[in-house]
Image 1 (cartoon, rainbow, N blue to C red):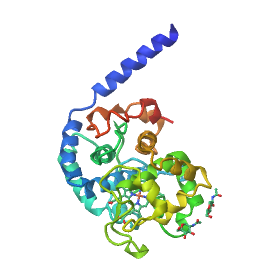
Image 2: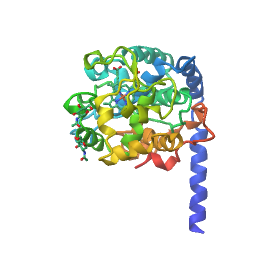
Image 3: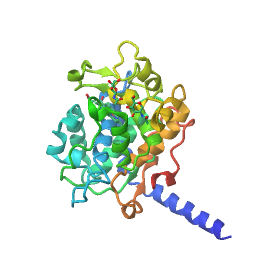
Length: 307
Ligand code: HEM
Ligand SMILES: *[C@@H]1O[C@H](CO)[C@@H](O)[C@H](O)[C@H]1NC(C)=O
Ligand SMILES: CC(=O)N[C@H]1CO[C@H](CO)[C@@H](O)[C@@H]1O
């Protein structure tokens, strides 16, 4: 009896949460989709949106001494701080930054910067055919204070070693299986600032950067002509580790990958935010358009967000 009552209460709470999503988010979803969907699948602005959301939230580390107000994490600082966007680690994101500043100026009386950054990534992911719907919440606090520097991963050189990357993500609270799933976002990636590392401008990390497919997982090891893998991706794919074993398990397994990616991305989108603040978030997943395979892969269950 107690369990049944509890279940009903939870269902009521969920229904209210999704019902409360302000209508402006549906308007924003339609607006962004115009720029994120192109004739070859998702566009350069869509890839920028996905990486930008990672670089805003991924600046969080449990090892950073907490100094107010900048703790890194999903706080909108990459959109609001001119210092942060100018760093080397954010090379390649300036064009999308300018685009999103324009959207932010248009909508800022109704939405926050940190929420806009993460919401845009969810819209971008479903703009790539095959992309899953990621559970998408709003209610984050913004800051224009730059995040701590040097907490984002390196694609080349000593920082791209497997153990370094595993530790870097572990410090953010991201497990090896989550990292294996998240790195698959490079299915939609083209490098624009890696000439110094031997990758030509616009060199993609799989043969189909407009599609949300698992070609990336096999091609990181097979390197077909015209595909330019990062050293970090090659090192992570090494099956001598948990991250590498899970990486290899996604080869030729789209549904398995999407099912793992969606909850990992939802987790990434709230990095650095105290549980007490997350409890007040509003679920706006319903405002994210359905992806082309929405019937195959459902949004992550709500409880996956909180760990
Ligand atoms: C080991 C971890 C990672 C490393 C070393 C890494 C590194 C890079 C580098 C060097 C680029 C090319 C940037 C440029 O030259 O324009 C890139 C692009 C990209 N990354 Fe990552 N990344 C990592 C993880 C992630 C994660 C977790 C996500 C999202 C969940 C992500 C999403 C993307 C996307 C979508 C692009 C394409 C951006 C564009 O074309 O504008 N990456 N990444
Ligand atoms: C896997 O192999 C690479 C390359 O030899 C090495 O750097 C890494 O530490 C190895 N990982 C484990 C868990 O042994
Ligand atoms: C530590 C380690 O394994 N580093 C390797 C990462 O990947 C590049 C490219 O395959 C290698 O050159 C490094 O030795």
